[in-house]
Amino acid sequence: MAKELASRSEDYAQWYQDLVIKADLAEHSAVKGCMVIKPYGYSIWEKMQAALDKMFKDTGHSNAYFPLFIPKSFLELEEGHAEGFAKECAVVTHYRLKADPSRPGKLMVDPDSKLTDELIVRPTSETIIWNTYKGWIQSYRDLPLLINQWANVVRWEMRTRLFLRTTEFLWQEGHTAHATREEAIIETEKMLDVYADFAENWLAVPVIKGIKTANERFAGAVETYCIEALMQDGKALQAGTSHFLGQNFAKAFDVKFTSKEGKLDYVWATSWGVSTRLMGALIMSHSDDNGLVLPPKLAPIQVVIVPIFKTEEEHQAIIARAEELVKSFRAKGVSVKFDDRDTHRPGWKFAEYEMRGVPIRLGIGPKDLEKGAVELARRDTMEKNSVPFDGLEDRIVQLLDEIQQNLYTRALARRTDTAHHVTTWAEFEAALDKGGFVYAHWDGTSETEQRIKEKTKATIRCIPLHNPKEDGVCILSGKPSTQRVVFARAY
RNA sequence: CGGGAAGUAGCGAAGUUGGUAUCGCACCUGCUUUGGGAGCAGGGGAUCGCAGGUUCGAGUCCUGUCUUCCCGACCA
Image (tube, rainbow, N blue to C red; front, side, top):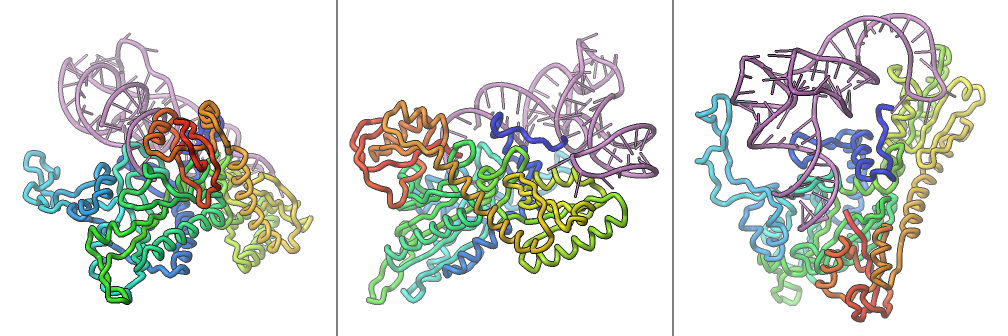
């Protein structure tokens, strides 16, 4: 009724927007390109943060916090980095307002408050962090330095979409410093593994781990690793990146250390990040035309109990039973909500929790009490079954795990089913139009990649790690190639 | 930032050649209801995105501006 969505098949983009709004995840703000993340959406993000934060800590990292503002002069120091971000920076040029003498009650920028060194609102923090690290690192004993920060960043995007691309977004950025090139590369790959682990085991989103081509590489990086996910409409989404920065930033910010052998050398660096874009990946991987579908591990509410009754006697009996269930579920670590609001009827609640993606719904009414059972509805399959109270909490724990697995399996099957291996240009174009990852030979040049992008809007998502070698010819140039790379149209 | 579309009550929409705003849902009250978004009756809520202008009179015409959506260029 009031909350219907556009269908995925008719208008995928509209479906996505409707869903974000109607599942109460986020809304547009009064500020162009910026969103308000609503409590329900934010609680999902908090669960992601908690899981990732633990993974970072478990791999030896500590959190810290660096300034929102970066002096413009810092951003200029690493050439590639400067070029990459120059076009999308918000710049603070003044530090004060004053009453506008020509418009009573209005404010104006005080021209006397002009900053001599303008400040950039961070689009990423490499520069301020490497400026800081210079003071922290003198010896090999100070290494490795393993820092993460949770922060907001601003990139002045021309075209925005809730969660997928907004002017301001939330993320974490890890910045590490190492004594050797090898150690930095190990770190880069380790954090990519953390991201892949998180994507697959928490988001239930299968990802391809790979390396970006030069065209797609992070500005200032020597090598960019990524995890690429496939959305239901057949488009790819970069879900996380991990960069081997070489000595680029160490040289730009003059960060040297004395080795055990007494030699002075620049340190080796990595940076890695995932953002609230993961919310978009989560939404577009599992949800359906009835609304959001959440993997149990990230669902703010895993089980909702909806009472159904006519008389107050029935109501009281249900409350008694429901409270027992809540207690036993919580004892098993299951997050459960008993929705005893009398302001909404059961049917309304069913629809509402479906829209919000709650993995399991239990309906309890007089008929169930009589049978000693509940009506259990699974959000992922929309199946309904009567399940006895006896042993219910164990069944729930098991079922949550089953749902988590099912979402992953389903997403993986979709990715596998839509994957194409092509050899000719005609096949390539046809495959792109169908959607999904397209494995094709490429001659390895940026020029060819660029031409393919211009002709088809598809990009090389990545060169998969441990990619099997296979002789072939480039789909566009016909030149020899030693491996297939992954193409797709992307978000 | 270029091209297109849109903005009227919380949401979705109607509004004729300019004459002071209508409908559905939602909301509030009451009664009846409650196993898939309840029914009936009554009620409240809009300076028509914002700022100017034309006019006796502007939701409607003109100018500017903000925001959103779609398509491009750019990007997580």
